[in-house]
Length: 151
Figure 1 (cartoon, rainbow, N blue to C red):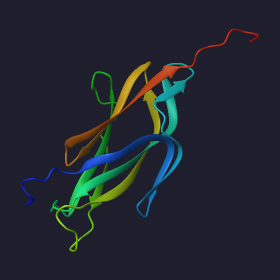
Figure 2: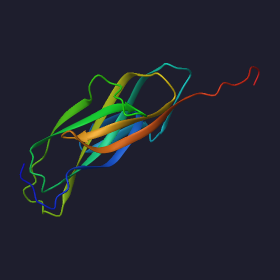
Figure 3: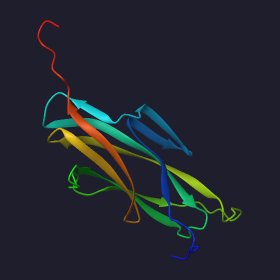
Figure 4: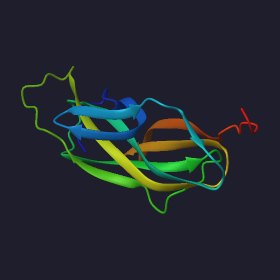
């Protein structure tokens, strides 16, 4: 890949957890977003659906036509919890008029259905671009406190 020597690669400037996210025409449409703790009744817990909304900043000097954007779920020890990361191949727009000092945003959403959490603790979604980690979105999974009877 041919790129400017002072160019850093793509970075994540927005990453959030939500109940649902859609990425449409450069915008993120978010339902129930911005949380960092998933409350469950008991363990093991199967969560029906959660999503991530991302905005990737790509330098105009980045010369690749396509990049691979992936998200993997890991436990607190860094062990993967999915059989393989969820990936999008992103075709980058051509910006012939862009100056070298500018960059552009690419939005994407990832939806995860029926994730299984075996125990309470810290988890994270590791976001990679072309197999290089660029961000980590951390969250907790916790059991709801039980209320005593009659309260």
